[in-house]
Image (cartoon, rainbow, N blue to C red):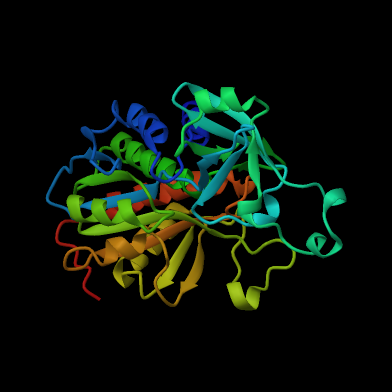
Length: 353
């Protein structure tokens, strides 16, 4: 990955952006795309849209990656200064006790830890149970008076970790889901621009509030009104212990972009994606999707009178944890594939099945 792109990748991933609080990530996305795109705008929802104008009358395309991440919200502060919290998006309560977190206040970031009773102080029966989220709290290491001066109800909380590389071309971080996808959309637009553009308009969209109901994807698909809409997401890698491939299929980190196939996917778009991958020598994987995918591809496909939708994903281990893992080569190859796909679209392409 070129140094400028990796710096953008790291900065975007680490920008705090729980659903409804995506402004820091949106700012990073705008700063990167403004010198590249013909126009960059942010809508009232907070989604970012970067437009690269087409060179002819080709089909318009929107590439969408959501810039929100899972997190938490402060809901109550005790007299002693401990903060009760509620989840933003889906979490596994088993991994939360003892996690380091960042509380994002109007005056800056406060480091905290998620506390609960230690095992030594639990009754025997309670030791066998997963602690409920409402029995945990954020300990900021400050007096109740100081906490109440600095923290407000509704302040967002993220896991207190950032991006690191490790192993053979692997990376670990919170929030690859799905700021990685927004990075891919932005890089695909850059690659298309550097290659001379595409026949149709291209929009790279950083959508908001996906984790709480595909909200930004719904409004962006409506407002941008593309002919083709592709959601760029993460999908579950199944290349580690205890994953049943008979139930979840075979998806591997490092084996290339994952192309979904099923009811949510326009078959013509899928065919053209495969053609582009094979023409460019980009490895790819196929994942079955027998129903709605639960991604922005759902919202895109059903917008207005219907769109030619697709879902292109990157294999991810340990989704919705502070230690999501992926192969950086997959991220780069997905951007290259989407750029090649967009550039191959010709005026008059018919996406009717």
